[in-house]
Amino acid sequence: MRLPTKKRPVSAGIVRQLKNFEPYFATVVRPAVPGISEPALKAIEAGGKRLRPALVMIAAGTGDDVDEEQLLRACAAVELVHLASLVHDDVLDASNTRRGVSTINAEYGRRRAVIIGDYLFGLAFDLLAGGNDNGLIEPLARSAVELSSGELRQRRTLRDLDQSVEDYLEKIYAKTAALFVAACAMGARLAGLGSEHEQIFKDYAGSLGMAFQIYDDILDFTGDEDALGKPVGSDIREGTVTLPMIYALSLDKSRSVGAALAAPTTDAVKAAVSSVLEGGAIDEAKKVARRYVVSAQAAAGLLPQSQSRKDMISLGNFVIDRYH
Ligand code: FPP
Ligand code: MG
Image 1 (cartoon, rainbow, N blue to C red):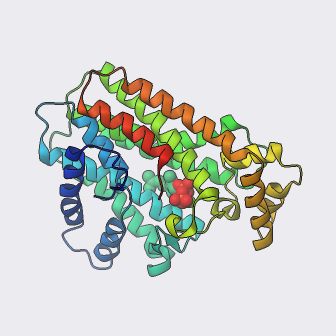
Image 2 (image 1 turned 180 degrees about the vertical axis):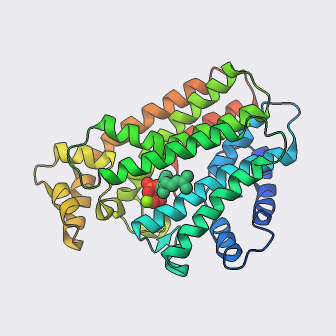
Image 3 (image 1 turned 120 degrees about the horizontal axis):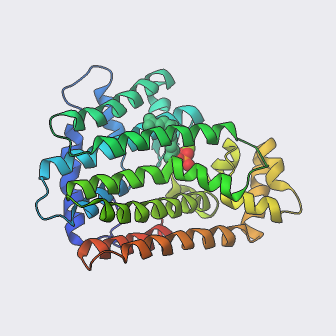
Protein backbone atom coordinates (compact mmCIF):
# COMPACT_ATOMS: atom_id res chain seq x y z
CA MET A 1 0.00 0.00 0.00
CA ARG A 2 1.34 3.41 -0.92
CA LEU A 3 -0.66 5.65 1.38
CA PRO A 4 1.45 6.17 4.52
CA THR A 5 0.65 3.48 7.06
CA LYS A 6 1.90 5.49 10.07
CA LYS A 7 -1.20 7.66 10.14
CA ARG A 8 -3.36 5.23 8.20
CA PRO A 9 -5.86 7.48 6.44
CA VAL A 10 -8.19 4.75 5.17
CA SER A 11 -9.74 1.57 6.56
CA ALA A 12 -8.18 -1.90 6.43
CA GLY A 13 -10.58 -2.83 3.62
CA ILE A 14 -9.24 -0.09 1.34
CA VAL A 15 -5.65 -0.89 2.36
CA ARG A 16 -6.27 -4.50 1.28
CA GLN A 17 -7.81 -3.42 -2.02
CA LEU A 18 -4.86 -1.08 -2.69
CA LYS A 19 -2.47 -3.97 -2.03
CA ASN A 20 -4.32 -6.16 -4.53
CA PHE A 21 -4.37 -3.30 -7.01
CA GLU A 22 -0.56 -3.08 -7.32
CA PRO A 23 0.11 -6.46 -8.99
CA TYR A 24 -2.87 -5.93 -11.29
CA PHE A 25 -1.63 -2.43 -12.20
CA ALA A 26 1.79 -3.80 -13.14
CA THR A 27 0.16 -6.09 -15.73
CA VAL A 28 -1.67 -3.40 -17.70
CA VAL A 29 1.32 -2.54 -19.92
CA ARG A 30 1.42 -6.05 -21.38
CA PRO A 31 1.78 -7.20 -24.13
CA ALA A 32 5.33 -5.91 -24.42
CA VAL A 33 5.86 -3.04 -26.85
CA PRO A 34 9.58 -2.54 -27.57
CA GLY A 35 10.88 0.78 -26.26
CA ILE A 36 7.65 1.62 -24.45
CA SER A 37 6.70 -1.12 -21.99
CA GLU A 38 9.80 -0.87 -19.84
CA PRO A 39 9.63 2.92 -19.22
CA ALA A 40 5.83 2.76 -18.90
CA LEU A 41 6.19 0.12 -16.19
CA LYS A 42 8.82 2.28 -14.51
CA ALA A 43 6.34 5.17 -14.40
CA ILE A 44 3.75 2.84 -12.86
CA GLU A 45 6.18 1.42 -10.32
CA ALA A 46 7.64 4.81 -9.37
CA GLY A 47 4.83 4.88 -6.85
CA GLY A 48 2.73 7.67 -5.48
CA LYS A 49 -0.01 7.72 -2.92
CA ARG A 50 -2.59 5.99 -5.18
CA LEU A 51 -5.09 8.50 -3.84
CA ARG A 52 -7.22 8.48 -6.97
CA PRO A 53 -7.67 4.68 -7.04
CA ALA A 54 -8.46 4.88 -3.31
CA LEU A 55 -11.25 7.37 -4.12
CA VAL A 56 -12.69 5.04 -6.78
CA MET A 57 -12.62 2.19 -4.22
CA ILE A 58 -14.22 4.27 -1.47
CA ALA A 59 -17.08 5.46 -3.69
CA ALA A 60 -17.55 1.98 -5.19
CA GLY A 61 -17.59 0.59 -1.64
CA THR A 62 -21.09 2.02 -1.14
CA GLY A 63 -22.45 -0.53 -3.68
CA ASP A 64 -23.42 -4.13 -2.87
CA ASP A 65 -22.44 -5.94 -5.98
CA VAL A 66 -19.50 -4.22 -7.65
CA ASP A 67 -17.69 -6.18 -10.34
CA GLU A 68 -14.13 -6.72 -9.06
CA GLU A 69 -12.53 -6.72 -12.51
CA GLN A 70 -14.32 -3.54 -13.55
CA LEU A 71 -13.27 -1.84 -10.32
CA LEU A 72 -9.63 -2.71 -10.93
CA ARG A 73 -9.85 -1.40 -14.50
CA ALA A 74 -11.44 1.86 -13.34
CA CYS A 75 -8.75 2.34 -10.66
CA ALA A 76 -5.99 1.67 -13.19
CA ALA A 77 -7.55 3.99 -15.78
CA VAL A 78 -7.76 6.96 -13.44
CA GLU A 79 -4.21 6.41 -12.14
CA LEU A 80 -2.91 6.05 -15.73
CA VAL A 81 -4.36 9.43 -16.70
CA HIS A 82 -2.70 10.89 -13.60
CA LEU A 83 0.67 9.27 -14.43
CA ALA A 84 0.43 10.35 -18.10
CA SER A 85 -0.14 13.93 -16.97
CA LEU A 86 2.89 13.76 -14.64
CA VAL A 87 5.14 12.35 -17.38
CA HIS A 88 4.09 15.22 -19.66
CA ASP A 89 4.36 17.73 -16.81
CA ASP A 90 7.97 16.69 -16.21
CA VAL A 91 8.76 17.11 -19.91
CA LEU A 92 7.23 20.60 -19.90
CA ASP A 93 9.11 21.54 -16.72
CA ALA A 94 12.32 19.74 -17.74
CA SER A 95 12.27 18.14 -14.26
CA ASN A 96 14.89 15.53 -13.53
CA THR A 97 13.48 14.06 -10.34
CA ARG A 98 10.03 13.20 -9.07
CA ARG A 99 9.35 11.39 -5.80
CA GLY A 100 13.09 11.10 -5.40
CA VAL A 101 13.65 9.09 -8.59
CA SER A 102 14.74 10.03 -12.10
CA THR A 103 11.91 11.21 -14.33
CA ILE A 104 11.14 9.46 -17.63
CA ASN A 105 12.45 12.47 -19.58
CA ALA A 106 15.70 12.45 -17.58
CA GLU A 107 16.19 8.74 -18.22
CA TYR A 108 14.93 8.30 -21.79
CA GLY A 109 14.91 11.83 -23.22
CA ARG A 110 11.99 14.19 -23.69
CA ARG A 111 10.87 12.88 -27.09
CA ARG A 112 10.44 9.36 -25.79
CA ALA A 113 8.81 10.72 -22.62
CA VAL A 114 6.11 12.47 -24.67
CA ILE A 115 5.29 9.16 -26.35
CA ILE A 116 5.33 7.24 -23.02
CA GLY A 117 2.84 9.79 -21.64
CA ASP A 118 0.66 9.34 -24.73
CA TYR A 119 0.87 5.57 -24.33
CA LEU A 120 -0.19 5.67 -20.65
CA PHE A 121 -3.04 8.01 -21.57
CA GLY A 122 -4.20 5.76 -24.41
CA LEU A 123 -3.97 2.69 -22.20
CA ALA A 124 -6.34 4.30 -19.69
CA PHE A 125 -9.13 4.57 -22.23
CA ASP A 126 -8.28 1.23 -23.82
CA LEU A 127 -8.89 -0.42 -20.43
CA LEU A 128 -12.38 1.08 -20.23
CA ALA A 129 -13.33 0.75 -23.87
CA GLY A 130 -14.18 -2.96 -23.98
CA GLY A 131 -17.86 -3.88 -23.70
CA ASN A 132 -20.26 -2.18 -21.32
CA ASP A 133 -18.28 0.64 -19.67
CA ASN A 134 -21.02 1.56 -17.16
CA GLY A 135 -20.60 5.24 -18.05
CA LEU A 136 -17.01 5.24 -16.75
CA ILE A 137 -15.39 6.80 -19.82
CA GLU A 138 -17.42 10.00 -19.73
CA PRO A 139 -16.16 11.42 -16.38
CA LEU A 140 -12.57 10.40 -17.11
CA ALA A 141 -12.61 11.90 -20.61
CA ARG A 142 -14.08 15.14 -19.26
CA SER A 143 -11.41 15.37 -16.56
CA ALA A 144 -8.65 14.87 -19.14
CA VAL A 145 -9.99 17.87 -21.09
CA GLU A 146 -10.04 19.92 -17.88
CA LEU A 147 -6.56 18.75 -16.87
CA SER A 148 -5.08 19.91 -20.16
CA SER A 149 -6.86 23.26 -20.06
CA GLY A 150 -5.78 23.82 -16.42
CA GLU A 151 -2.19 23.02 -17.31
CA LEU A 152 -2.30 25.34 -20.33
CA ARG A 153 -3.75 28.19 -18.25
CA GLN A 154 -1.01 27.66 -15.69
CA ARG A 155 1.65 27.88 -18.37
CA ARG A 156 0.16 30.97 -19.97
CA THR A 157 0.31 32.74 -16.61
CA LEU A 158 3.83 31.72 -15.59
CA ARG A 159 5.59 34.54 -13.69
CA ASP A 160 2.45 36.70 -14.00
CA LEU A 161 2.28 38.66 -10.74
CA ASP A 162 -1.16 39.99 -11.50
CA GLN A 163 -3.15 36.87 -10.51
CA SER A 164 -6.01 36.80 -8.06
CA VAL A 165 -6.81 34.06 -5.57
CA GLU A 166 -9.84 33.24 -7.79
CA ASP A 167 -7.61 32.79 -10.87
CA TYR A 168 -5.46 30.39 -8.89
CA LEU A 169 -8.44 28.44 -7.54
CA GLU A 170 -9.95 28.01 -11.02
CA LYS A 171 -6.66 26.72 -12.35
CA ILE A 172 -6.11 24.15 -9.61
CA TYR A 173 -9.68 22.93 -9.91
CA ALA A 174 -9.02 22.08 -13.57
CA LYS A 175 -5.45 20.86 -13.05
CA THR A 176 -6.03 18.65 -9.99
CA ALA A 177 -9.53 18.57 -8.51
CA ALA A 178 -11.23 17.55 -11.77
CA LEU A 179 -9.47 14.16 -11.75
CA PHE A 180 -10.48 13.59 -8.10
CA VAL A 181 -14.07 14.31 -9.18
CA ALA A 182 -13.77 11.80 -12.03
CA ALA A 183 -12.42 9.13 -9.64
CA CYS A 184 -15.39 9.53 -7.30
CA ALA A 185 -17.91 9.70 -10.16
CA MET A 186 -16.48 6.46 -11.56
CA GLY A 187 -16.72 4.74 -8.18
CA ALA A 188 -20.28 6.01 -7.69
CA ARG A 189 -21.26 4.68 -11.10
CA LEU A 190 -19.71 1.29 -10.34
CA ALA A 191 -21.75 1.24 -7.15
CA GLY A 192 -24.88 1.94 -9.20
CA LEU A 193 -25.68 5.13 -7.26
CA GLY A 194 -28.23 7.62 -8.57
CA SER A 195 -27.26 11.09 -9.73
CA GLU A 196 -28.05 12.72 -6.37
CA HIS A 197 -25.57 10.51 -4.51
CA GLU A 198 -23.05 10.75 -7.32
CA GLN A 199 -23.22 14.55 -6.97
CA ILE A 200 -22.40 14.30 -3.24
CA PHE A 201 -19.31 12.27 -4.09
CA LYS A 202 -18.33 14.78 -6.77
CA ASP A 203 -18.76 17.71 -4.37
CA TYR A 204 -16.64 15.87 -1.83
CA ALA A 205 -13.92 15.08 -4.37
CA GLY A 206 -13.85 18.60 -5.79
CA SER A 207 -13.22 20.12 -2.36
CA LEU A 208 -10.75 17.40 -1.39
CA GLY A 209 -8.81 17.96 -4.63
CA MET A 210 -8.65 21.71 -3.99
CA ALA A 211 -7.33 21.18 -0.45
CA PHE A 212 -4.86 18.61 -1.75
CA GLN A 213 -3.36 20.94 -4.38
CA ILE A 214 -3.21 23.91 -1.99
CA TYR A 215 -1.31 21.71 0.47
CA ASP A 216 0.98 20.51 -2.29
CA ASP A 217 1.75 24.14 -3.04
CA ILE A 218 2.34 24.83 0.67
CA LEU A 219 4.66 21.80 0.95
CA ASP A 220 6.76 23.26 -1.86
CA PHE A 221 7.83 25.81 0.80
CA THR A 222 7.50 23.95 4.08
CA GLY A 223 8.46 20.39 3.08
CA ASP A 224 11.92 18.94 3.42
CA GLU A 225 13.74 18.12 0.24
CA ASP A 226 14.24 14.39 0.94
CA ALA A 227 10.59 13.83 1.78
CA LEU A 228 9.37 15.92 -1.16
CA GLY A 229 11.62 14.13 -3.65
CA LYS A 230 12.30 17.49 -5.31
CA PRO A 231 13.95 20.75 -4.26
CA VAL A 232 12.08 23.23 -2.03
CA GLY A 233 11.02 26.34 -3.98
CA SER A 234 10.53 24.43 -7.27
CA ASP A 235 7.36 26.38 -8.06
CA ILE A 236 9.17 29.73 -7.83
CA ARG A 237 11.98 28.39 -9.99
CA GLU A 238 9.47 27.17 -12.59
CA GLY A 239 7.51 30.44 -12.41
CA THR A 240 4.27 28.83 -11.22
CA VAL A 241 2.44 31.38 -9.09
CA THR A 242 0.77 29.48 -6.22
CA LEU A 243 -1.50 30.54 -3.34
CA PRO A 244 1.30 31.10 -0.78
CA MET A 245 3.03 33.31 -3.34
CA ILE A 246 -0.15 35.29 -4.08
CA TYR A 247 -0.51 36.00 -0.36
CA ALA A 248 3.20 36.73 0.00
CA LEU A 249 3.07 39.13 -2.95
CA SER A 250 0.46 41.15 -1.14
CA LEU A 251 2.30 40.97 2.19
CA ASP A 252 5.89 41.03 1.00
CA LYS A 253 7.32 44.51 1.50
CA SER A 254 10.74 43.50 0.15
CA ARG A 255 9.23 42.27 -3.15
CA SER A 256 11.48 39.21 -2.97
CA VAL A 257 8.84 36.85 -4.39
CA GLY A 258 8.32 39.00 -7.47
CA ALA A 259 12.09 39.33 -7.91
CA ALA A 260 12.64 35.54 -7.67
CA LEU A 261 9.82 34.79 -10.12
CA ALA A 262 11.38 37.23 -12.61
CA ALA A 263 14.97 35.99 -12.13
CA PRO A 264 15.14 32.74 -10.12
CA THR A 265 18.78 32.76 -9.10
CA THR A 266 19.72 30.55 -6.12
CA ASP A 267 19.94 33.56 -3.79
CA ALA A 268 16.71 35.12 -5.04
CA VAL A 269 14.78 31.85 -4.57
CA LYS A 270 16.24 31.43 -1.07
CA ALA A 271 15.19 34.96 -0.09
CA ALA A 272 11.71 34.46 -1.55
CA VAL A 273 11.21 31.12 0.25
CA SER A 274 12.21 32.79 3.56
CA SER A 275 9.84 35.65 2.94
CA VAL A 276 6.93 33.27 2.18
CA LEU A 277 7.73 31.23 5.31
CA GLU A 278 8.10 34.22 7.60
CA GLY A 279 5.48 36.65 6.35
CA GLY A 280 2.23 34.85 7.23
CA ALA A 281 1.43 33.65 3.68
CA ILE A 282 1.54 29.98 4.68
CA ASP A 283 -1.01 30.50 7.44
CA GLU A 284 -3.35 32.26 5.01
CA ALA A 285 -3.03 29.45 2.47
CA LYS A 286 -3.61 26.84 5.18
CA LYS A 287 -6.82 28.57 6.18
CA VAL A 288 -8.13 28.25 2.62
CA ALA A 289 -7.12 24.58 2.45
CA ARG A 290 -8.84 23.88 5.75
CA ARG A 291 -12.03 25.50 4.49
CA TYR A 292 -12.03 23.08 1.55
CA VAL A 293 -11.50 20.14 3.89
CA VAL A 294 -14.46 21.31 5.97
CA SER A 295 -16.58 21.49 2.77
CA ALA A 296 -15.43 18.03 1.69
CA GLN A 297 -16.26 16.58 5.08
CA ALA A 298 -19.64 18.34 5.09
CA ALA A 299 -20.44 16.71 1.74
CA ALA A 300 -19.42 13.30 3.15
CA GLY A 301 -21.69 13.99 6.12
CA LEU A 302 -24.68 14.02 3.76
CA LEU A 303 -24.16 10.33 3.04
CA PRO A 304 -25.65 7.59 5.22
CA GLN A 305 -23.34 6.26 7.93
CA SER A 306 -20.92 3.75 6.34
CA GLN A 307 -17.25 2.75 6.23
CA SER A 308 -16.92 4.77 3.01
CA ARG A 309 -18.14 7.90 4.79
CA LYS A 310 -15.59 7.36 7.58
CA ASP A 311 -12.82 6.91 5.00
CA MET A 312 -13.87 10.10 3.22
CA ILE A 313 -13.70 12.10 6.43
CA SER A 314 -10.35 10.66 7.44
CA LEU A 315 -8.89 11.28 3.96
CA GLY A 316 -9.85 14.93 4.43
CA ASN A 317 -7.78 15.03 7.62
CA PHE A 318 -4.91 13.24 5.88
CA VAL A 319 -4.72 15.84 3.12
CA ILE A 320 -3.96 18.65 5.56
CA ASP A 321 -1.90 16.51 7.89
CA ARG A 322 0.23 14.59 5.45
CA TYR A 323 3.88 14.25 4.92
CA HIS A 324 5.20 13.18 1.53
C1 FPP B 1 1.38 18.08 -11.48
O1 FPP B 1 1.13 19.15 -10.66
C2 FPP B 1 0.66 18.19 -12.79
C3 FPP B 1 -0.68 18.15 -12.98
C4 FPP B 1 -1.60 18.01 -11.85
C5 FPP B 1 -1.34 18.25 -14.32
C6 FPP B 1 -0.46 18.08 -15.52
C7 FPP B 1 -1.28 18.10 -16.77
C8 FPP B 1 -0.76 18.10 -18.02
C9 FPP B 1 0.70 18.06 -18.29
C10 FPP B 1 -1.70 18.12 -19.17
C11 FPP B 1 -1.66 16.79 -19.90
C12 FPP B 1 -2.81 16.01 -19.53
C13 FPP B 1 -3.10 14.72 -19.84
C14 FPP B 1 -4.48 14.24 -19.64
C15 FPP B 1 -2.09 13.72 -20.34
P1 FPP B 1 2.23 20.21 -10.22
O2 FPP B 1 2.99 20.63 -11.43
O3 FPP B 1 1.55 21.25 -9.42
O4 FPP B 1 3.08 19.37 -9.21
P2 FPP B 1 4.53 18.75 -9.30
O5 FPP B 1 5.34 19.61 -8.42
O6 FPP B 1 4.33 17.36 -8.77
O7 FPP B 1 4.98 18.77 -10.72
MG1 MG C 1 4.90 20.33 -12.11
